[in-house]
Amino acid sequence: MLFSQRGYDTVSVREVVEEAGVTKPTLYHYFDSKRGLLDALLKREEGRLLSSLLQAAIYKRDIVLTLENIARALFDASIRHPDFYRMQIAMLFSPPESDSHLAMLPFVNQQYEIIEEVFIQAAQDHGNLRGRHKRYASGFLGTINAMIGLSLEGELDLTEEVVYLTVHQFLHGIFS
Image (cartoon, rainbow, N blue to C red; front, side, top):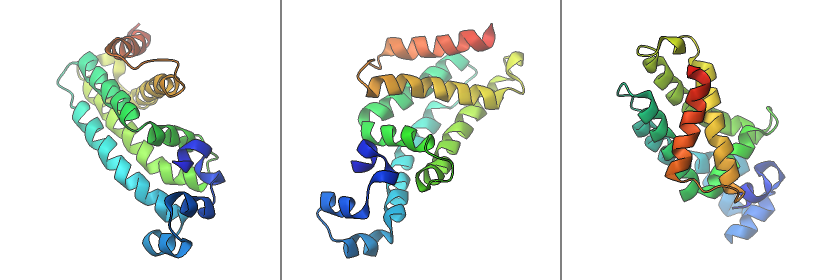
């Protein structure tokens, strides 16, 4: 996947069609533009990831279990689709006005909102979480993405032990 290897903004339409073995008119017929191709790719992948994340984020009054389920779901998504996950992280941190960042932002915001809702619900059981849900969702997703980044670079295997350690390291910070 060229976008994952070199970044969306640096890949030309010519390179995309050569890699795919199609012509420019074919790409434009089906996707209207390079951005249309990106939007179609994001729509396909976001369905998979968000469905898994929504299922993992069902809060049953056990914050540890719920966060472990979320970490596991995102780790599994990065293992199953490493090119997409690498692209997602890169695009999120691309320049704010770039096509890649603007395309990825709604998708990543949905992830934050799902995780944020867990912290909102958990605040009923853990009073010290009240009013901090945005920071906690951002911090937790950042922690998970840092672990995934290490995995994508071959520095870490995303094992059950890493799920446990990631969640408990994060929780130690917010409950202490």
